[in-house]
Image (cartoon, rainbow, N blue to C red; front, side, top):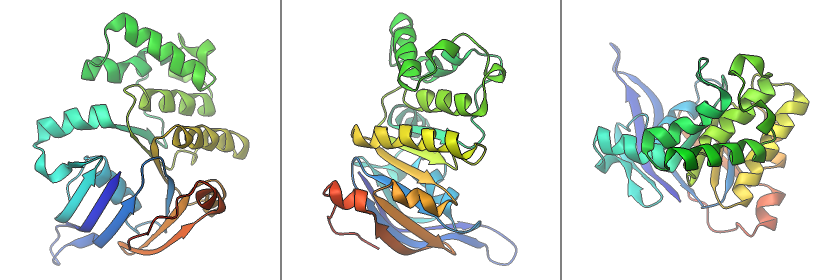
Length: 239
């Protein structure tokens, strides 16, 4: 699903620049649930931005689902991102003046993937799937943090992307609600989507297939969990 080949990302500076990622190689499988862990500044968010096509590497190649992202210009990259990647943020980033239903419909409207009546039908089905169909016509401010994060997951699934990226999705949630959100993401992996979660929480390792550890912009370790072995994900790991 994902091949990151000898990727570096250097942000320019007066002292020669800062290497957020340094010659990273990483191969991830379709349907895998992966946690990326590491201290602040280790390169986790930079890696996710490259996988989402939000940023570009300084060198190396990023290939997602057979698409080499470096070969796409900005307009084609935006179309690819809208159809192929769902992103879940720590701060939810729901538009406050739109209802929850309208927020979930937005990616379908933006990418013209569904006629509006079908988009509304799909959005309602997704809200039911994440357990908040009853909140569809409320504004985000009327929902709890956990409900807003569920709405954000529904929005990320709107265009049925093969890749879900979640950047600290449980950072603003209590332990019980965080567990429910992680269970929703795990269910998407079992349904065949590749799910990558950036987190500081090492206990997430219990439910993912693989933990990738970054330090100073490098992959310094990969560990498969029991869930990964039970799923038969024992193909070779490239570091």
